[in-house]
Length: 228
Length: 232
Image 1 (tube, each protein chain N blue to C red):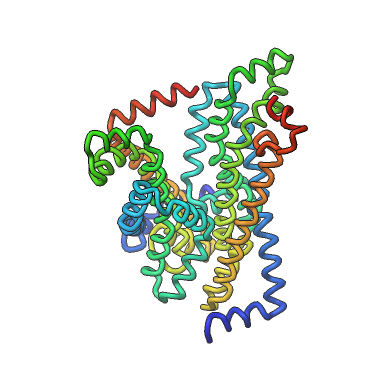
Image 2 (tube, rainbow over the protein chains, first blue to last red):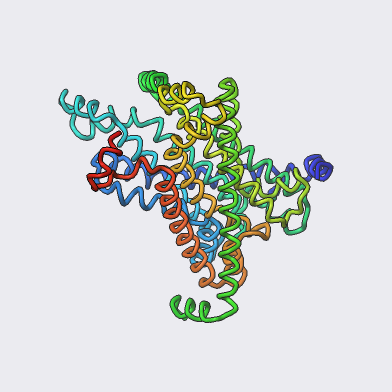
């Protein structure tokens, strides 16, 4: 397996053109980014609203659990038959699977804000939306971004699976390699997909570090020290 | 032909039903065996983290990394590492065991940390050696948190097994590749529904198991004869 993999990596033909690594990587990142953006626009307002008002929480958590149990391959093939075109079908499938983690993260974050804090915010005269944006969202950021990170991992993995119905991206190496039993190509696909997932997760971890206000980080640190 | 008719025709065939049963059985085996292995691995990691606190950071990083690797990538790389054939169902079992363990390491360590110091100290004072204290006192007290993690892992395994169909081992996942190749809705819809039902049933069974393992968390019985015992 190792010589085959090295041979694949050493072949210049695999590094340029529409089937080359840069192009496939760009496609993969593109699908993930597009699906994430659409899922974010749908999920974030709903999650924040449910967390803020406390209404519809049971429905939201229940839907999230059901979607987690949905088999991704089933979702992708089903949408393929419904829409009869690989790329849009796969993208709809990706969005469907990315919405629940983002929604759950936003809801859990806002919902977990200490009621004393929200009471204090109302006490100093903040209105609903002010309280949401200036108090609840900043405090909720760690959990909220945790949901986004889960969604991105889910998207990278599912985009690879969606190569089965003809989507481009890194999953192509996995599917095409399996079809012709070229193990070097399969391993290359697996390595790139895994590396992409790890790198994107690290980038988001860095983003989380930058975005989460210092006060919230200190408070987290203090409670985690207090509990042990 | 409407979807309902299609489903009727599909489910009407004895051949299909036999295929569904074998798919369901394989799915259970592929999803549930890793729960057992993964939990054992996570308990081992918990023991390690307890006895060597310096290793905890490493355990967390490794668990995170494993969890990040996409399932399809893990399924195809494992045979290269351990020398099985790519169509061997062992690959899927190993991959899902690793995911389960990765998911459980953090809650496991947190739950063990949450065991009150007074309890572990009492056990030590009563003459419990570290191993017996771990399995007899700390682990049982960690069960509620661990059980929550196991429920998440079980549902996620049941959904991930289907991806195995792409490498020829996928339980109900074969219904998706079958439906895709024949452009036929019925197997896909049946596959999705059966997967969801299986996830629900397994989840309910795990809740029952947790209740069985944590008798002290059950609501107090109303029978006054037992009231004293419960309070004590």
